[in-house]
Image 1: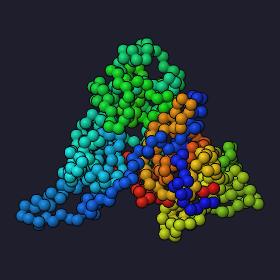
Image 2 (image 1 turned 180 degrees about the horizontal axis):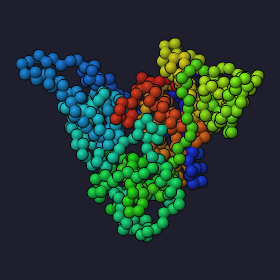
Image 3 (image 1 turned 90 degrees about the vertical axis):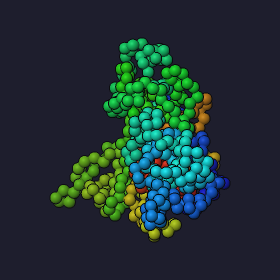
Image 4 (image 1 turned 135 degrees about the vertical axis):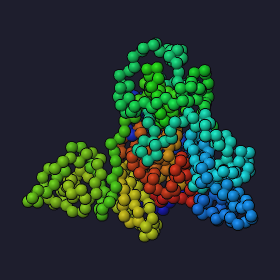
Length: 525
């Protein structure tokens, strides 16, 4: 075991960003996908940030932390009204019109970034700006803290085209914040509006009434019913591009094809001209039958609500047993593969069976049992949250103080216990969650002439360089090594951890940063 932190100079960023029915070539490509983005992770670049002046820091605080206005400052109470106008809470709102609208700690460009909003998000703001330093449109305090510059990234116009074209945001807290699809070959075209039948024939060579592939019926079931067409799409207007979204080509009806081996999170899907189209988070429309819908995983971690040790069934076809009136264990039901249980510590038949807190017994030989962690930093003694990850067990256990509260199977780096500087091993040591993104795009390593483009990876928590805990929708082998260095989680487990760890991400925000560090993560053999 290596408890001390790994020195920064000795670590290179690596990673991987669930199993789904993929075409063979794409499945092989995704095997080698990298966790860390090819560029700096979205929102990262807090280096060389300056401490905010005291006044600005006070303004960045939640409204309840600000001093009460002096209602008697003068006869008309103008100073009190002016101060109230600088606080959110009066019903005024602003909209994000960029892929990342940064929230700063103070009303100035060089102030530390606290997080960001995503295009289409609407948050509460102050009635009046707190300044114009480097921002002609003005810096507005937003709820629950921080300041946003109105301009390319944000607008006071809640009917802005980017807002009108974004019918919904991510379904935060659900296992999959968007509906996910992976491109087939050739990849889909990126339409700029719902295309007419004539435009589809011109762009794709489709003929009217052409039959859709059989697999679309399966995808229809996975994606659910299409959404109603909103007034924006019914109008036929071209989709805007949020500031920061890529747009290399532009034709009258489309923006070329998607990148080969792409995966997308879809905000909405629409039925149109006898076809189904999906709206991506970068505001492109793609024909669904040119993609494969992601099938959700059955993997779920286990919440530990009683005293005991978490464990997982690693075999198929395992029977549970229950004592009859005479106390003899009799078959009772089934323990699904990778199901989580909490063991009470009692055994039977010479240790062959282990009792669970559900009142049933499970064959001990089928179980992978957690090794409960030790308090190496005083976190447990102080009742604080921390996470223990064992590479050998491929298991994560979350603690509140000395008590385990959640456990799940993970997939760490294919390099296993190797050197992360020279292999795809997961870095070992003690770290802290520093960035949390509801979703983030991750680029794969170069694979011959192509690379994997993994968009909207769910519930990403960076803890060291580009290493992160995050959900995956492209494989379903949790409990085995698989990634290029990151800690892969089933999306339901990633969603649970995302809401449990610090720093919290405020409602309506897409990400939050904390350079001082949030929840502790200890990764070891």
